[in-house]
Length: 124
Image 1 (spheres, rainbow, N blue to C red):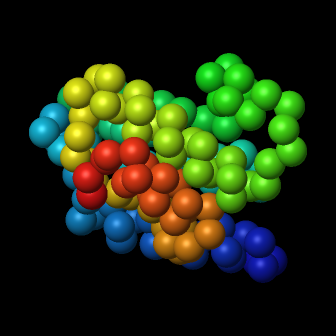
Image 2 (tube, rainbow, N blue to C red):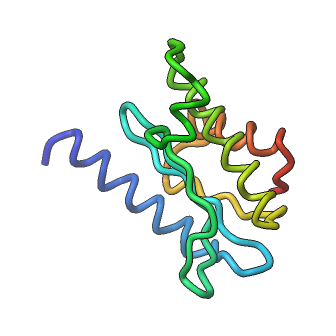
C-alpha cells in the first residue's frame, strides 16, 4: 500500500468515526464539506429524509460570476463557497446546522468555509 492510498484510507476511517456521532435532522441539518486539490464543495443535508437542501461548489455558475476573472487563492475560493452556502441556506430557511468536516482536519480551506458561513449568519 502506497502513502497516498494509506492517507485516503485513514481519512475514510476518520470520516466514519465523525459520521457515527453526527446526524442531520430537519431542524438541524448537516453541513458537509468536500475538498479536492483544486475545488471546494459544501452542502447542507437532511439525513432524516435523505435530501440535499443547499449545495454550492467552486465550479458552479453562481461561483464563477462571483469571482469574474479575478485571480484568487484556494483559501479565498473556500471563503466564497462558505458565504454562498450561508446566503442560500438563509433563503431556504436554514439557520442552524451541524458541521461535518468529513475526516479532514479543521484548518486551512475547511476552516475557511466554516468561518465564512458563520460570518454570514449560520449557527453551528
